[in-house]
Image 1 (cartoon, helix red, strand yellow):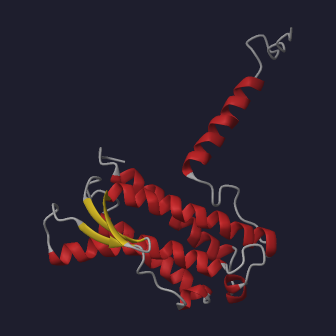
Image 2: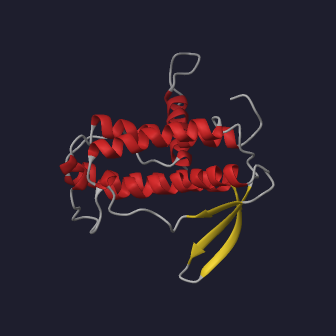
Image 3: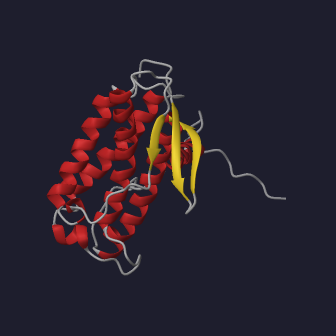
Length: 212
């Protein structure tokens, strides 16, 4: 990474999330039946629905950037964003090929339209509209919403994992659906345990502490 713009590391985290999903669709969830399997553990859920929902949030964030670029080139103009205009019952929920293509396209969009995070200032203002069900508007920033889409997507991958592993007996990587902060903690924990069990200079492990 080459800049001090927080949007750049957040781009790479979002790209890693999309890469996980693409790998899942290329190697694990490879049939329409697996994608549209109706979960009994999470009623109303399918892998396809969780993926579509995740796709929608990042797509809508990118759409807000594209709409602003075409209507007002000024970086001082807030982006207009609503996550409540999602698509439902689309082909990517039930077609494995369509789902894979949609995420490959989204990953390309994220790379090109943000120039790998360098194009968009982290503090670029966003006017977020939320239906609660009362319509409210709140101020946010590009970095905040990009981070939200990653955490939100990770949450849905964790739910998707329950269906894939618990009901379809599929195998996914150990870090699939794990939040970045959790992955960082696990790495620290492993390194700490490895250091604690390493031999001392004399070739013997440290003696166990005496319990009084």
